[in-house]
Every structure is written in structure tokens, then in C-alpha cells.
Length: 45
Image (tube, rainbow, N blue to C red; front, side):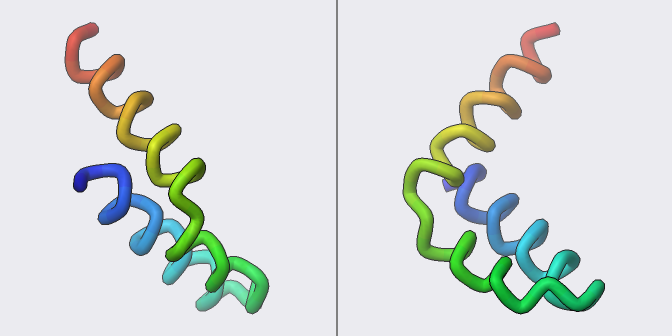
């Protein structure tokens, strides 16, 4: 769930900077999973 929220947030930022292709990140399960795992790892320190 967290990964999907991050994917949307990063996608919105990238689109606002002119990267229209970043809209695809919103439905990319692998990307969301990567972000979720990264977030968990960072929280654990």
C-alpha cells in the first residue's frame, strides 16, 4: 500500500516536471513493490 502511494506521489511530481510517461508508474506493480521494500528498509535503519 505504501509503495503504491509513493509511486503515485513520484509520478505526480515527474508529470508536473514534464515527464508525461511517468503516468505509467501509477499502475506499475513492480515499481510500487520496489518503493515499498525500499521504504521498509529505510525505516528499519
